[in-house]
Length: 100
Image 1 (tube, rainbow, N blue to C red):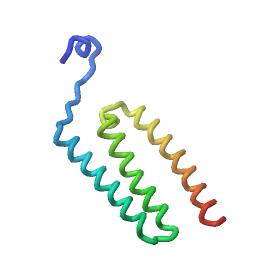
Image 2: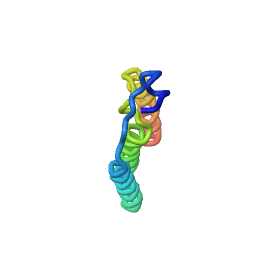
Image 3: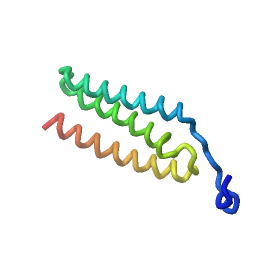
Image 4: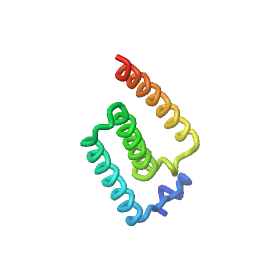
């Protein structure tokens, strides 16, 4: 622990390089799945599958690379509120696109 961390009571969270590599490989796999699904005619389901995969990738990045899982509960609540608002906008746009 550094002197700064001892003075301010901050905790150090160590994430192994192996975990970062696994998450990166998962993100690459999900990206490949997105590209593969783009070539398949799923009609209206293509949007839902692409957004689902993108949401999973976003959660992985938030939790692992941005260290959200190590933050206080307040940050989790702020992130969930932002996610819900984003979901509302996505659903509204989807319905506009689907029924227009």
